[in-house]
Image 1 (cartoon, rainbow, N blue to C red):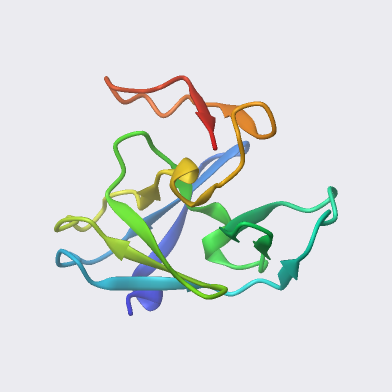
Image 2 (cartoon, helix red, strand yellow):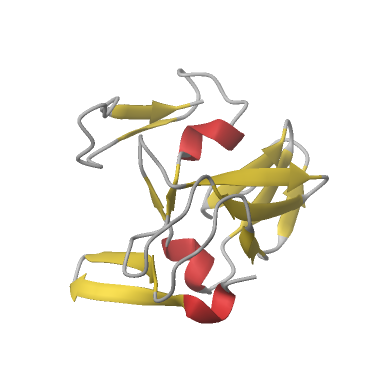
Length: 131
């Protein structure tokens, strides 16, 4: 995987992102999300999570995966197997590029139960990310 080649861009105090220092080939695993797994309904509402199943979530790990941003035209996707979530490259990613994925692709929530504003800057931005 490419974990050792991912770095945090701290360009501004309120916005951090993750970028790669090397070229990443298409369709390869990049990094696994490794936070605590929460199952059942309801899950704690005071934590940020990544949904990996209808009632399964991975919490933040305190690591670099917590900072990977959403993008409406991402360069990565999640492969979910059980309660494991591994980020894969969609296509070749150039060195220096930000690593992104579409947050809505792992959610089984409805538009009414989960949504957030999007400011990704893509010409095809949906403006709202939802399940």
